[in-house]
Image (cartoon, rainbow, N blue to C red; front, side, top):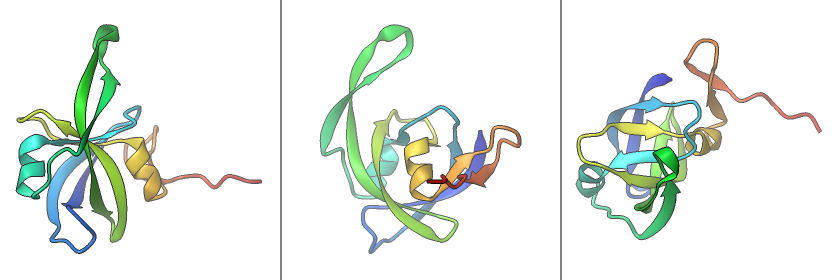
Length: 116
């Protein structure tokens, strides 16, 4: 798990809002609480069925946001999280920045290059 500052915006034109976030190894998707989405002026545009603990499933709202991390910008599909929860950055968003959670240090690290 890596603590970081992630910047979020409704589009690449901004404005961007900096928020504390956790990059969690093993989490594929990025979660942003509904109140923060509302503050950015966005709302979920569709739903996606996601698995939960104990084999449960639930429909969750999703929306595309523009993310900025370490000076680089990428678009990512984010899941609308519950009020009172924090921002969680999943591997799909980290991969857009060519980053991963380092399993040894717990911090962010460049993704290894794939040899062809």
